[in-house]
Length: 628
Image (cartoon, rainbow, N blue to C red; front, top):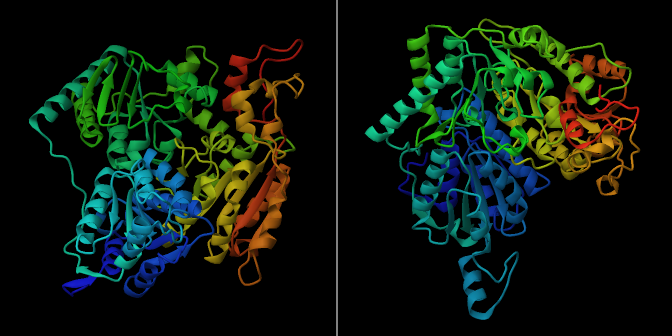
């Protein structure tokens, strides 16, 4: 913190970033950004991480914010926050996709865009002179970013800069969503008042009306449970985003209500917590989890975002549902607005314990569903065990691969007093990788990162940079699962991993150079047994085949090692995982890229429903696809 009464605008913003506990700023440099980066380096401990692409920088900042938000060591106890910096137009428009994803998924980011000088804009207005990266619309960048941020500021007057910077950062902390700061080149070195105090979140005051609405929502939820009995909880993304894991875990432990999570809330608490019953993702769930979830008496969603991906397009959740999310509570057909999840969780827990008793809802819903004649395991423990380990087929399939990885992660999990720990943080991309990985059993909180709503393909590769740097103090290593099409979008971000000595393990799921999820969504019958592969056009889902493991030779060197492998069989995968598990093995000196070779017609079991719903069984053949 500066003790001077004034500082430059560059110093002001740099010091504010440092105050927030930000340790790394991601981005791609440009001439307008240079003065700020020099100041950041000289005046703060925030380190610059240059990336090959602006999109990759935004993905790294997004993941950095997610993992630091979840960690206990957050500076000053604030919400974790990320930051990214680019140059005007050409950089900012490349970054836009990542900021859009952060906005949709409630990730707090500060997007810094270095703009042409005030003088250059006056020249453009007066005589139409365009200089680097300018367009004929001076507010083009600002207007675009207003669509995907909660505050967007163009800073042209150094006297107003402190107010604009502080208001934007406060909005970022309070709304837990991105903000945008566009700073003109000649403003960086201009002087302004020095920072005063620290910036904090601003909570909305609770009124008597809010309290009455909260009481009504809790009462309605308790009555729903009393009427339908046998509740199951469905933990969602807002438990993670609003840092409510402790409250959710208290609710589970004191009531013993069994629970599932969405994919976006995987590892919001340890998935070894008693009552954990898997990931419910609507029709695209493991079939056993879907049976158990739907067989419960009623469902209580807490912070869950209902999307077409996890509810299969269902618009009404039904009379036997309650969902607390998006600043309101639905109980059947009733809606209670302006009820904050942070207040609803403890109030619901206290009422349930008071009215039903401590641990009153303890039950094994898998055992109950099995007794009811449903095709599920005879206990929750048996179901969870079935998702781990062999026997494996000779060749790797989507499902057998993730069972194998699950066994590996379980073997790597230690049990210190009070909490399990694992050296890996899973980072998963969209599509088949996301569906396949949802059944991995995560031992620690916040050990699974995925962009499950925005679903920008390639997110995981850039995100691994932010996870590795955000978790470097804990020695955590990213384990990335990404499809081949997704990887081709952002593969160059692995050069950042090499350059900075990061050590992710990146599994590229190569199903013979094919956009598998797109084919499944448009022409699911393509995957049906006994059906010619021409059933449904596939030409537009073709990819150029790469030997992904050879990228280790492109990005790595003797000074900065990187290793590449290809596996097709489970014995090959076993041998590689043994090496990855051994810290002294030379393979672990840098990033590892693994091409997992899969059959083009393979797909995760959770997507069988697409074929069952859309494809009549061919004559003499079963109605469902062949999966491992």
